[in-house]
Image (cartoon, rainbow, N blue to C red; front, side, top):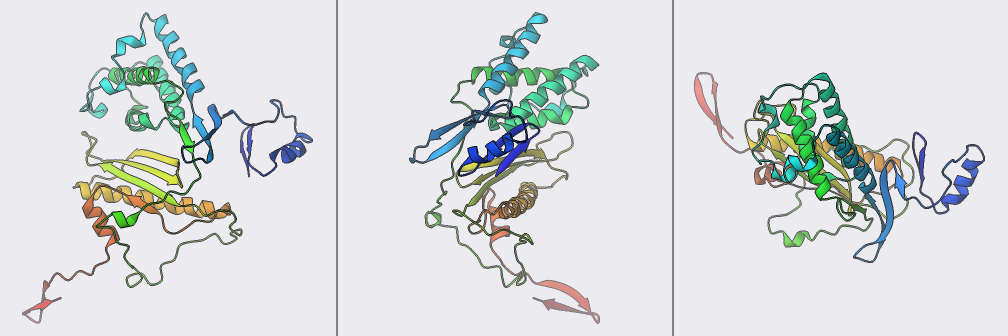
Length: 331
């Protein structure tokens, strides 16, 4: 498998040097060939996990170190420092809502700077800094017309990152070991059979799917939503984290497109968004020839959503209808 992004090549094979040598006969490999230590701005290193297996670890230490220094230099030119923005992101009031802010709108120059800083933070998130995902997602909603406090909030995020920039912070271990879940320990958990309701339901498979090779993988996800988190338009915010085995590979945080009347509605919308994402993921894995083991397990914290989506029941509530001038009770 060869991953190519513009001029960065990451090759995964039993003997990668053989294939890279063939590639070098056609193209000039300017940075040489060897064990990767950086890809797309992120730091990569091979580590041994606590369970004794070998895995790859991804972080954005160098990327953020340079980004934070650029922000400090910019502020110094204006006679400011990051220390003036509190003790970091977590010092910001938990009840702060960027969408109801009424401070003056930024001028063109500072608007452009706000957009640049958001772009830097979003790429840091892609490289593994999931801890700032929700905050950056909410601030990204104001890219077209940011206000003064929105820019201050971005500087607070950089202040938070500068205080938590150790090499051990924000690292993601891509562990390929299976994630075993002991469902027997969950008293209320019981897999139900849905074939009576959907007898023709089948998972969509690629038409020319290659023969699956290697060990099968498991897919697990966490799904959540904050009901009416946006105080201005009353939309909720979805949060999704998807694992393949013990490796987190997808993190998602975005405002929903609809207004829901209850937390059940917002959580269910989040579950629908996740369903579409995981269907595409399982399809893609099979296109790669990766065997997928069993169904995808999803965990959420709303009991009503769990019951409604996992327990097949028929509606037996009686209702009343009018026929020939008489009331009939139908079940």
